[in-house]
Length: 231
Image (tube, rainbow, N blue to C red):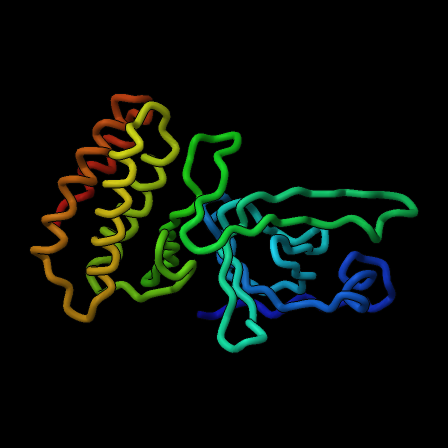
């Protein structure tokens, strides 16, 4: 996974990381975009980490549903979700206290539903021939290549799941079935030699739930995606 390097730190105590990082220490946290502003690149930012939260400089572009990853002192990498993001924008003499506080969720935990009825615990974002995928009950974030010829299908699956999770009135069980089907399709499409039979078996469930979304308010967007979910 390619990510941007951390921005330079001023070192003069004028921002949150300068002020508190020297006391509490910092970690370089790799942020993988979720469903909010998914066009953002994967990037790395300094943060003060505690057991249940992470604090970043106030101008750090991080949103609910993003995947976070940093070095685990025990070895390997720690992986979490941004379950809740609070921007504390202090000014004046307290400007160095301004920061973004991120409440962390562990593997398999979905972020709280706020503002838009959605489930932030599952994210599929297609970038060219790669898929950024966050799976419940598996690794939080991973980037996997999609086999040639399956890019458009993977993109349609990611968009379909986003539409389903944002549409009010869909039965929770149907949303879960759609997640499982979408995951199965994308993971199969990422194999060196995808099995079309596996994909064809999973797509009808996704099309069915998406059709329900079309009648529950998603309208034209859902209807157009239904037509794309064929191999």
